Length: 503
Image 1 (tube, rainbow, N blue to C red):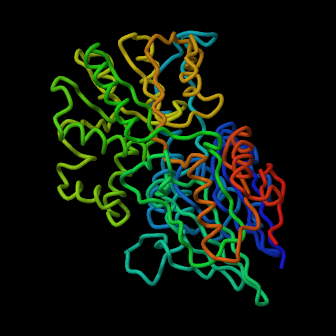
Image 2: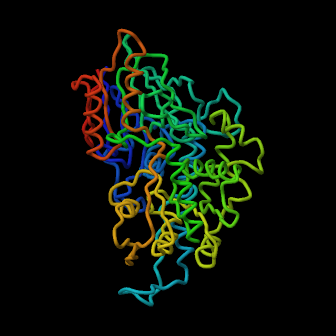
Image 3: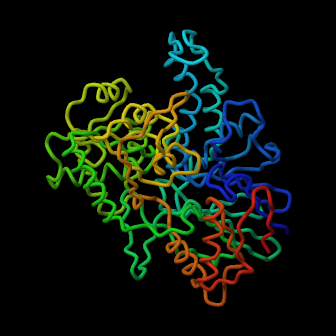
């Protein structure tokens, strides 16, 4: 039996996870994420492999860098089964529906508008050609498998901890990854001729529950800590390196930093602008703001807004799965009209015109959360364009900012930030509140490895395969894993398109 793994996307970089686990002649795709350097509405073939040769697809979670090219996959001829957890299937449907409707929404927004400057000044802004239709979303979602042993109406997906027999040689099980609702570590149990080989994906992996000296453990609400106890010894692990060289500050310290920013905003009568992903980061913020509100720590004249319909849709999915929240957070959601997602102090903007009104007419201090977190797409782009030149405002960046993104340029405090053809001066304060990350840091990653490696006496990991991190982060994590006592012979940094063999 021959087992290989090839990462075609997130090798020595963050974006576009697309890994193929090949067992003999069957190819199993793990994630199909968007690489933001490639436009999805292009007619260019973006897959470096034959889509029609893929037997089936496994989705670890519903972030765009893991599901953003599913429509492309189906468009290019994939017609196999797709496996995921319940929540991942539900959130993925929302994600790819937005992908299909984004061109239509853009065309509606520019209808009748003309270029205000540049070489085409005075000409009508041209419409974009729509590549995907909602029928493509329906078809893609029809490929998601359903746990037929559980009555859930037309819901797609599977529960955690339930082994799924994929074929004669493969069983797969989803275990909670603690990254976002529905996120999973996938344990692949490969068996043939009396021999078993296990492969575990641990990317993206949420904050762990390990008790590490001098490293306070984050209590990230809404999701539970990643599973670390598996029923079988792990032979090979595929591990993320998003924060391969970094150690997160304690969550409590980040919460204090956020509160100080709110206080300064109130004092300056300005705006606190928070770019946040519509899945998980916005929801974590909502829980924290709710706690501030309930404890009476917020000024009465501070207005708070969320401008992210996508986040509002995900809120409903999260609330439909209270079993996946931590116990303390679960108690806060008993009142459907007064809970961390929906409370009187926090106003939700379904239409962007409501947000624009705040930006142009608001005379009191305000806090505004908008998608997306790296500032390159979504409503936050226009929000930032209209706020970064005000010195009374603060931009709070809460998570990882990939190279070349607008978020990275803000983090680096470049003098001017580009919005299309326009360069806008950055005069607002920019702060980095990094402790809100939903990814493990290097200390937590190594703790996860050590626990798995020692769980079954007499057995140890045969390979540690590092991906999903910028190049320097991948190699930094590899060095730290070696320092932690693991043999350098089993540590690999995966390279794009390069196959590795699992013995």
